[in-house]
Image (tube, rainbow, N blue to C red):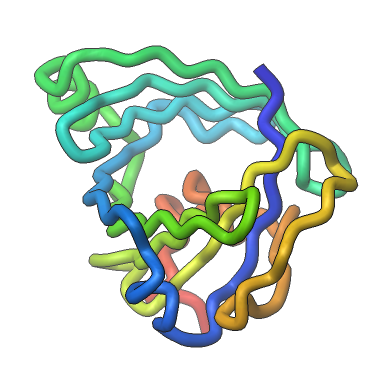
Length: 156
């Protein structure tokens, strides 16, 4: 139940032609407390309820619990969520042994593109695709829970 991941800004849209899958995601947060977040997500034809714990100091590791729920239940729960609901298109790209997930945010977060890669250990090596930019792992303003409170369009 540990999630180990790194986040990056994206420097070009080259990833689009490399993607093997694109999925529309709508998600909201029932709780964005610094110690834990509770997220409701509709991802394509599936829906999930996810609880994430506080990240370690580097921002690379945190506890994650996820349970599939019905889309109807997720739609009901989204109406109870805090502030802005996040909408994005997720592109999945295989780069050697890893799958990068590139999120193109829409709505109030349009213009922001973030790539994530999940790892099996904090120090695991991975190949950096050419479109991968500055690392933003651990920078709280890039967490989806924070983007729901302070959307990218409000940044200066």
